[in-house]
Length: 371
Image 1 (cartoon, one colour):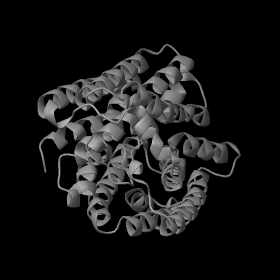
Image 2: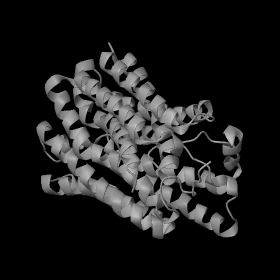
Image 3: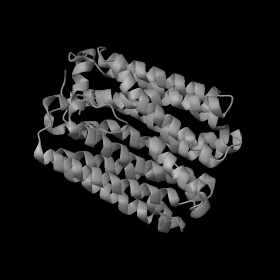
Image 4: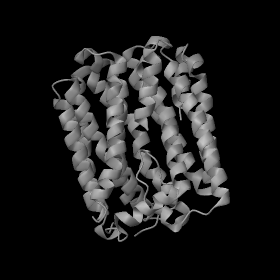
């Protein structure tokens, strides 16, 4: 695998750290800003909303730019958003800064996936994307726990300043490790790429992505209060448990990348079915410390998931209710994936559908090509 994938992984590490660290800092931010935990959960949704809006917007603005330049520019925007988060004087300003921080997220992974798959042989495309995303999962092992610990001892503002420095390192890595010859400007233009949206299978793939990640974040957005109020863990132990989530995610990412190169559809259905099972078991597993730790390891559009989880929590259904809401979303994801499978059997995806699909955290379901 090319060394250039390391640069993409560094960027993914920074993006994963700033996205997931809010889950660990939720009680600290809520106490400092004098807001409730469900209200603080909107900070997760604000970041995710930035991802949703930023992905197509920035894809349009950078459609003709060399991809290496795009990646560096996106990380510069990431640095600015996190620096402003650290300096935010109040909740409203922090909400806006988190939105800004999320803008480059989806576009970086979308462009990065195209760059990654263009560096390897066709039979290793899924694996190359999984290696880029390994930066995201390692963020849960190292980045999020360290950043959470920093926030608990130095204040949550120090955490976002530290994340800004990771973004600077990612910019340097992209500049020095990715050769300009490997990232030329696309020749198809925005109109050519948007032509893929005329394909129903592409829309069904995106819908599966949105619902699937919504299921995950419905539970994970509120993992800290689950662990402290239901399982009985102290706040200082939560950082280690967040690392366990990263261990499970990293293993799943590496195994999933290999499996997807052999059977993409089977890997998708297996992952969603596993998510349903794990999330339905969450309320039971969160009753004891040992089983809660196991649940965190097994836990395979963030905005919707965090919002739905917050609604369940605010309605008084219990601290573990976001996990049940997530399981319902995962079942819906299985339904959408089944419809997509049925449609795919009846029609062939048009050639335009393998353009880059800029989506949050998710490798392209259609095979990308180098422009």
